[in-house]
Image (tube, rainbow, N blue to C red):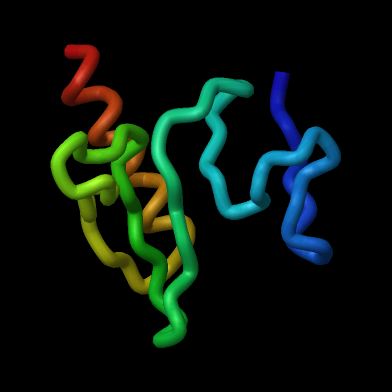
Length: 78
């Protein structure tokens, strides 16, 4: 089951911000668009000490960020 995110109003119908990355309905990471127009991939979990998410890379396109996110998940599960 795939969810369609609505970027027009910034929130999906179920109240999750539209910039969260989903794969078959399971939340993995988070992709945010930067002011520069690039996309940054952040980890799902926050660092307990700093309260911030780990930067997993900055990419020129959303497709590149999603591709890297899949590679990260493959590495974690494999």
